[in-house]
Image (cartoon, one colour):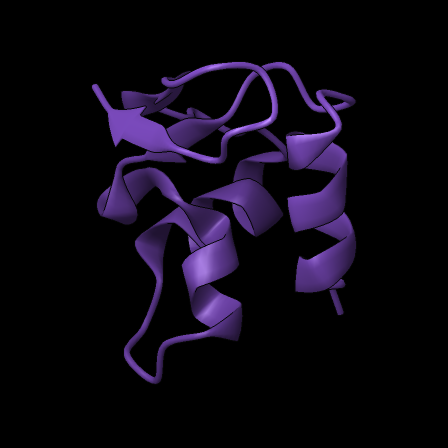
Length: 72
């Protein structure tokens, strides 16, 4: 399981430099958090290929040390 607090701290410390939002239909990780079938996971298992479609990103705003993001 992903440690959310650890990810948040790494983001705030600028150890993570790029965060993108993935289209729901193309996100195989949805199978771990949603109860409905996930075609992206099925495709990944069947073909050993993944087609991620980024639909947005996180842009840092504010002064150094401030926490703030804007989804673009």
